[in-house]
Amino acid sequence: MLGRLFRLADLARDLGRRRIMDPDLARGRRGEDIAHRFLQRQGMTVVARNHRTPSGSAEVDLIAWESETLVFIEVKSRATAEYGPPDRAIDQQKREKLARAAIDYAGRAGIPFDRIRFDVVTVLFTSPPKVSHFRDVFTIRSVANTN
Image (tube, rainbow, N blue to C red; front, side, top):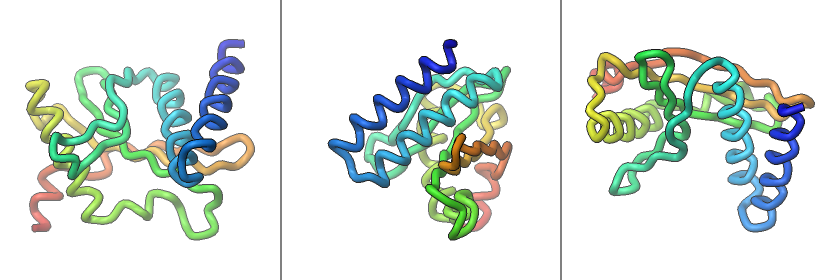
């Protein structure tokens, strides 16, 4: 019953967003809503959404705790898999931006880098939406070593 209420609330929020946002941006936000609920069902505690660095140069979609690990999550959504899986859109530049946002957030919260992780959640808008969770997709060290 509660799941149905959440889905109804998500749909209402999505309809409202479509009236005022670009359709692709609204779809991305809906994907974040779906990913948020998915991660909660997996036992993660989402503590922030759309965290930006003070300069606005970097953003991370979701930040969650899983046990003693602070997880920074990039959500990628697609209407179809026609052009490949959504996670293929995460290139080196995107990883660098995610790392900047994570360094900012972890620094402000006093969390050491050995307690953070980067995950990706993909959402394909099939009926019902298909959600995939990829854990520990890269490290801050791996991003720093490519520059």
